[in-house]
Image 1 (spheres, rainbow, N blue to C red):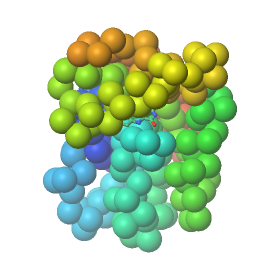
Image 2: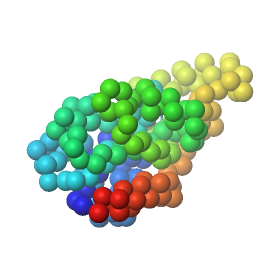
Image 3: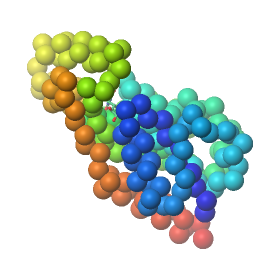
Length: 181
Ligand SMILES: Cc1cc2nc3c(=O)[nH]c(=O)nc-3n(C[C@H](O)[C@H](O)[C@H](O)COP(=O)(O)O)c2cc1C
C-alpha cells in the first residue's frame, strides 16, 4: 500500500503529527498547498490532517474538492484541537464536519496546542475577546475547548502534542491493511 499524508496546519501541530506519521508509516507528508490532485492517483491510502478552527476542521475544503477523485481509496482524517479528547466534543466535531458523502470516513483526534505568542494578530484578538467573555462565565459551564483556552495564560503557549496520540491511527492502518490482504 502506498500512502500520503496531506496536512493543513496554521501553527504547526497538525504538521508535527504528519511528520511523526510519516516516520511511522513511511508515507510522504505534504502540505495541502503543495498538492496537485493528479498526483493522488498513485496512492492507495490518503490521510488528511487539519487543525480545529471554530469547530471546523481545516482540511475539509480540500477534501470536499478532491473527494470525487479519490473516493475509491482508503481515506482517513485526523484533526488537532486545543481541547483534550472528549467524547461529546469529538462527536459534535465529526457530525459537523463529516457531512454528506464524507460521512463514514474514519476520523481520529490528536490533541494539538495553543500558542498565543505566535498567533496572527487577528487570531490573538479573537482569542482575547473570547477569554474576556469566558471570564464572566462559570468555569463549570465551559465547553472543553473553552476550558483549554482559559488554561493557557495570555502570551503563553500550551503544547499537548504527543506521538502516543497516533496509536489509534496506526492500529487502524495495520488492521485495515491486514483485512484487505
Ligand atoms: C481562532 C482559533 C480558533 C480555534 N478554535 C478551536 C476550536 O473550536 N476547538 C479546539 O479544540 N481548538 C480550537 N483552536 C485551537 C487549535 O485547534 C489548535 O491550536 C491546534 O493545535 C491548531 O492546529 P495547527 O497548528 O495544526 O493549525 C482554535 C485556535 C484559534 C487560533
